Length: 260
Image (tube, rainbow, N blue to C red):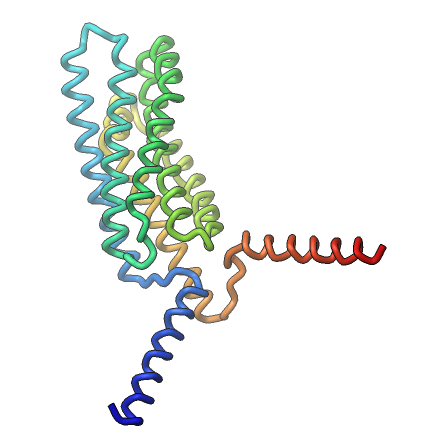
């Protein structure tokens, strides 16, 4: 290899390293194509989860018509199974669409699995209590379960995938929570009892999953555009910045003590 080739090769390596370091320092890269793909994937995973809910509820309730006491267990088990499968598909889709960000897919799914088991243990008491009051009210706790599980899975996915930009996940989750609560409230107030149950069983998971992932992707995309245009990055690794400030305060305190 002559000197000119070596210099060019070295320059290319340095340029690649520069690009990598720039990517690491900035927010996660995302383009409009990835936003559309994420939205499309969320519809697919939500649709599969809804199919599981419809078939499970229909088959189990049909077999247990004379055993009303098992209704809450059927509902909560159905939500848990549907959420695990929907979350697994979401994680798989994320890994395909943005492999640089979503590298820890096995760790993410393990934590999502544990979250759903925890929700099962905690919410089973609420399901049983509501069923004893009025069996028709199960649809309300069912809806709340879907929203909580989806929000928790989404936050775990973002925190474990991009710890430096955890505030991005927190901010969009607040926006999404307000949106999903408003949407669900409007639907419950505008539909009749039979249509309400049909909406929850068929469309709720699809709608919430789509809203969660779409708003998250759009929020990330807009923040990345903002960062690209202005060079400002207020949400960058806030914990690291706090840690640096704390270390600086400790250093000053130590210096003051050493004067005595």
